[in-house]
Length: 425
Ligand code: AMP
Ligand code: GLY
Image 1 (cartoon, protein in one colour):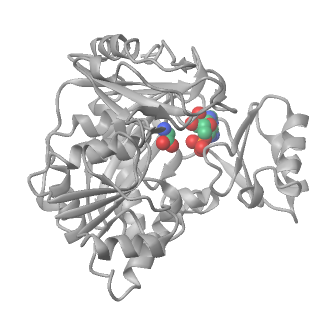
Image 2 (cartoon, rainbow, N blue to C red; image 1 turned 135 degrees about the horizontal axis):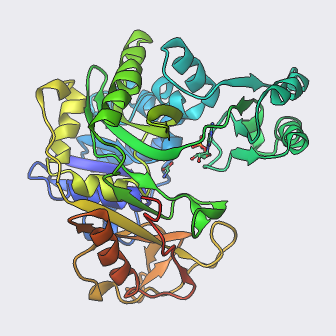
C-alpha cells in the first residue's frame, strides 16, 4: 500500500515511524512532514488545509490510504471531500467525517451529544451575543473556580479557568462581544469545575465497533509542577497507574460504549481515532473533552506501545472489520519528554541548529518543529515544540530516566524541557 499521512508534528512522525515498519507498506508520504519524517518516508510540500493540492498528491503518488493527524482538516471536512469526489471516493481516510469531527470542532455539540447519551461530564450552559447576560446569573450559581470555554477550535487556547466571579463575567463578555478567540468564541460554554486528575483514553473506531488503545497522561503546562501557561503538551507517560481494571471498566461502560452507540444512532460513520480527555473524580470518570484525533504528545507514548501492525488495524477501520481483529500491546511503559524552544508557548526564535541527535541511546526521537536545511543538510528548529524524546522502561520511572538521559544529549540554543514529567503519579 501507498500511504499518505497528513500533518507535520511529533504525532505524525510517530505514526510515520510505526507505519514504516508494516510489511503491508509500499511507499510512505507525509504532507508536509518535518525533518524526522524524511527518514521514514518522503515529504510532500503541500498545505494540509489545501484539499485540492492533497487530491493532486493522492493521484500523482497513487495513494491507497490517507491518515489524517491533526483536527483542523477533519473539522474542515477532508474526509467528506474524499467521499464526494469521483476519483477519491474509494481512497480510505483514517479520521472521521466532519459531523464526527464536530465532537472536537464544537464543544456545544459535544455537550449536547453527551447529555443525549447520558455520558458523564461537567454541568454547563452555552451562551452567545444575545443571552450572555444570563450567564452572569449562572456563574453566581456555581462554585469557583469557573471554567469558560470557546465553543469552536482555538488551538488549545480557548479554555479559561478563573477564581473570581467578576473576572469570569468580564472574560465571558470579552470572549463573546470582543471575539477574544475570534469566531471560536461567538458561543461560550460556562462549565462546572471538576476536581481530579486527568487522563487521556484512546480508541480506534470503524463506525461499528472499537478497539481500546493504551491510555496516557500528558503534561500541558509550561512550568514545573503544572504551573504557567498552557502548551500543546510538554511530555507524556503510558500506562497511567490509576487506570486500573476497575476504572477502565467504568470508562468503557459509561463513556466509550455510549459514545460509539451514540455516533451510530446519529448516523455518523466514525472511522478513526477518538480521544477522550477524562477527569478522574474520586474514581469516577467524566469527559472534559473529545478530540477527533490522536493526542500529541500522547501519540509519542501510545503508538510505540502498540505491537500490532498499525496499517493492518487501519485497513480494518476502512473495511469495517475491526471487531474481527485484536490488538497486541507492549507491556513496557513508555515516557516522552518534549524539548521546546525558549519562549514557547509565547514568541520564540526558529532556525537553531540541533546537535547530538546521532548520540542518543535506547530511545526514539520524534521530530515536531524541525526542518532540514537543504543546502547544509543540517537539522534546525522550526517550531515551539521541537523534539519528543521517547523511551521504554519496565515502569514509568525507568522510562523517564532513559528519556531524560537522552534529553540532555540533544542540544540547540534555547532548549527547554520540564524535568518533572510524571511527578504526580
Ligand atoms: P480542554 O481544551 O477542554 O481540554 O480544556 C483544557 C484544560 O482545561 C483541560 O485539559 C483541563 O485541565 C482544564 N479543564 C477543562 N474543563 C474543565 C473542567 N470542567 N473542570 C476542570 N478542569 C477543566
Ligand atoms: N495533548 C493534548 C492534545 O493533543 O490535545
